[in-house]
Image 1 (spheres, one colour):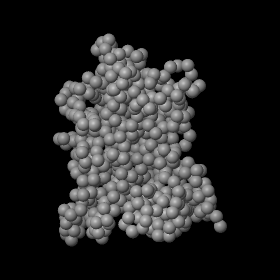
Image 2: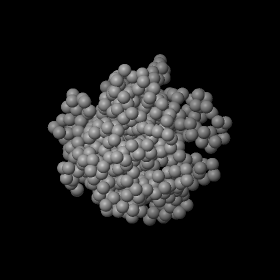
Image 3: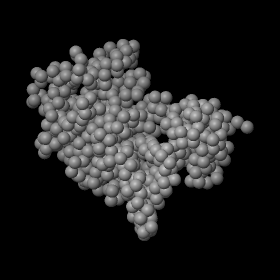
Image 4: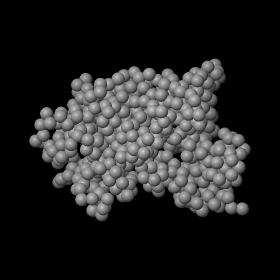
Length: 610
């Protein structure tokens, strides 16, 4: 059993809650720009004092409407400035925020409203309001208690943010302060429901102490990102995910200007306009940027040049990383010369894809492939991989600019201890670990051992305290021959190929390991263009020997990572896109393995047919 800890850097008084961070920020710099609100006319700067005044007005409206300290209030929306405004207003009124992914089905929304007890819900617009209203009308589980639906729009005749603020005009500042100051570190600030890869999602009780202590300790832990003058970031991850919420609280505490992008579709344009200095992203974004750069190079006749630049970036980053571990002398003069040349010719275009001003990126949710991580490091967009779960208020380990090892998820955050049990399971104790599962004492008891949260993930700690994730206990495949296979590394390698959108490795109880591959629509179109092939449909592409040969090369590359017994012997195509909407990815883009295997059981059986 191995253990690693990082000492707590900043403490907080027991009577502190998240709203104190907003009051402190406003007192320190009332005119500092906390948010940039995207409007049809461009980005509108929101100073701290203006944000606080709007939060207080909405909080008074909630109190006038009957919200008491500790009452749960749900939010169903894309990421937006209004989401953040409502979140802080709920806290200012003494309430508990219950986020709901905007992609959630009616049954999931019903479950969360029933389980949390929320009888007020903010919705993005009238369309979402109508959906929730129809759900409430036919839901026997919600009983006779009325559910108040408030639109997060300002325009309209009623039941929106403007009318909510107007309702609260009679609430005194003293009454607002009484409810605001009711909560302390130990009290629940938010009930965040797990993505639910299996069964109904469980509500994780995240306390004010979790948010406050994580925020106050992350800032001095990552000063290069959060304490530089003019720091700004763009949030596009769903705010229903606790990582996005935790980062928002961190940014507010640090005075970092934060903007919101509604999702991946308009992200590249928003990055160019907003120009963040650091970015929180997920591996799929890096994969898309790399594939896009490679395609542009190929179409301009510079495929060989890009391949050389890519190889140089990887080689340069690898040499630098080994040197930081004391295992090498770093890049040699010839490699440094090549890197310097490409840093003028091609790497700036990669940096421009992130807006041109990004100094660091932070990647979470799932692993980024080692090669792509080295590529972006070498191209001047360092990726700091981190690790965490909903139950740990997301981040519990992260690489830092001064303490970084590519391929690991970093060292424990301040006030956090990581332990690897004898069976390899990662255990966590510290400032971010949640209070427990809402209304589920049995699940809470089962989730802890000796005061540590049992993550269900498997990993290793090196002698310097860097954590490497090797798999997930429940995802481990055991072949008919008794070989244990971790599917994650194989799937990550397969996804490096631009044709591969998602890959699902199978083989539990089977004679060999195999894989299901879902083609990426954009990658397929680019491949067809580069190879002067008429645009193929996914179904036609699955039958095309050239496509199959290209994917086989990716399979061959993945197999170099493992032993012969763990190698992928066969693969087959899924004629479908695996998405959140299809029910095969969680909103945080984790694979729902059981759902894929069940829904595509025919394709699995075909792989093993004699």
